[in-house]
Image (cartoon, rainbow, N blue to C red; front, side):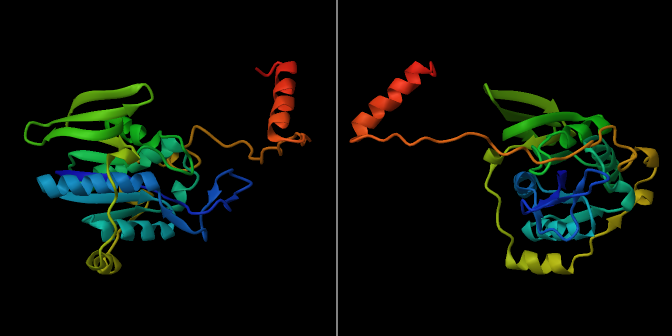
Length: 266
């Protein structure tokens, strides 16, 4: 099984800054972590490799500092890692990001499966994984809770999807893209040997020129159909509190109940 995992480095703080001109996050110099949902995707890929053999490659798109997220993925057990970093990628929306990642996936060579987290905690759209599948023309299985059966030789997979109204069991042909929820597993910690190997690993950095024939007009901010027009903080909540004065808890409860019914709250 040749598996590709797409991960994202996200801010590890609420004190993020926004570029006032582009409306995009300014990631340089901000403490960052691997998107938590992506760690479950990586863990599942490692478990599949341990069961069926093969290799796990990890891809991330971001500024140069995103290489640290890739080194952590290597420390957890991934075999190879690739960083997509170029000024031409800056400001990508989910569509442009999916387009760029799809070209990087093609560059890595043949694959059987792509695994992504269900969403990133900074954007919360859940669109990039399905977008990559659409660009590659392969089946997407989203919100995967469990891989019930995988038959690499027969080229089929059966998964259980976790939906709001229940669970759904789906069968599909390989190659396939999965987006997984956190209930699928418990990610492992990097080993000491893995950390040492990751520190020495050579992680290639691919630019827009390296993923040709990607259309430059479809990359980055210029290639993004959606734009952030403006960003502002929500207004503070208005309202006032009133303390009910009474001789006992029962008396206070009676006063509160009377006011609730008089105002037709219930």
